[in-house]
Amino acid sequence: MAVIIPLGFYSKIYDGPASKWVNNSLGGVFYVVFWTLLFSLLAARSKPWKIVSLVLLITCVIEVLQLWHPPFLQTIRSTFLGATLIGNSFSWLDMAHYMIGSLISLWLLKILR
Image 1 (cartoon, helix red, strand yellow):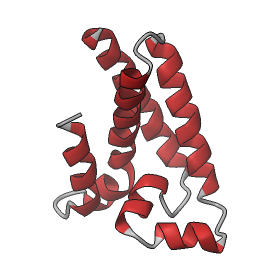
Image 2 (image 1 turned 90 degrees about the vertical axis):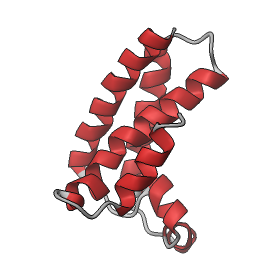
Image 3 (image 1 turned 180 degrees about the vertical axis):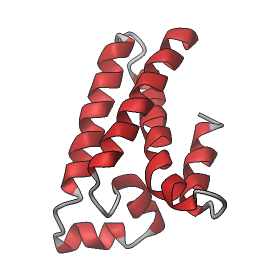
Image 4 (image 1 turned 45 degrees about the horizontal axis):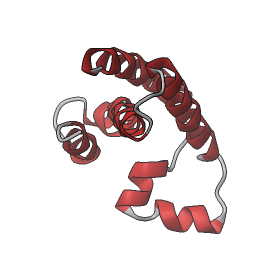
């Protein structure tokens, strides 16, 4: 987690080659890996595939919620941390990055356990 947290935040401010993709999509991979690692620490006895599945489901729900723009969510999204945690624009392509993050997470959990 000491590596994934800085990588995730850096992906939001990176401005080199392919920066639009890194800022808007690659961060989704790091996001899923982070939450999977955190949940695996909190629920160490759970099977890796259950943790990964739960994180993927929650992440996809959060992505769909980006289609909803009530004032309280817009207030949260107006901050860097809020935009980083819950996002601000829906994209079907993000789901593919969440799947990639899930596969990486499953692999990491199996190695770490």
